[in-house]
Every structure is written in C-alpha cells, then in structure tokens.
Image 1 (tube, helix red, strand yellow):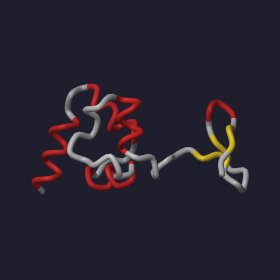
Image 2 (cartoon, one colour):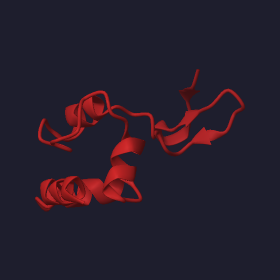
Image 3 (tube, helix red, strand yellow):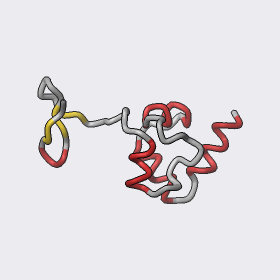
Length: 81
C-alpha cells in the first residue's frame, strides 16, 4: 500500500517514491483528461498497455498529443499497423 509522499507523490512499501503509475486505468485517465482521452482503448486497459501499443514513452507525451488533437490519429495509425 502506498502512502502520500512529498509533492503528491507516493511511497511504496519499501519507502521509494513511485514516479510512474503504469497500472493506472484508462477510465481514471479519462476522468482527469476528459472522456475522449485515448478513444479506442477500453476503460480497463492500463497506461502501460496504451504506451506500448502507441509506441509512446510517457503519459506526458500522450497528453501533449491529446491537447493538440493528434492522439486519435496516432491511435488509428497504431490500429492499422
């Protein structure tokens, strides 16, 4: 179980600060970034799965593409490949 750390980060059981939350569900990301975020992925898929499928390296990169209106095109391209 994680506990709040500094700057809203969380500490794992061993005390290390967790920086990445690859197990975050798409449904949670949609609550934060809007219902159209990562359209084409199911609510149950994880951030790690989305990143792997889109060959992306971070949530920040996905957010940038989403804000520019480019994420849906990248998802369609990945599905066609």
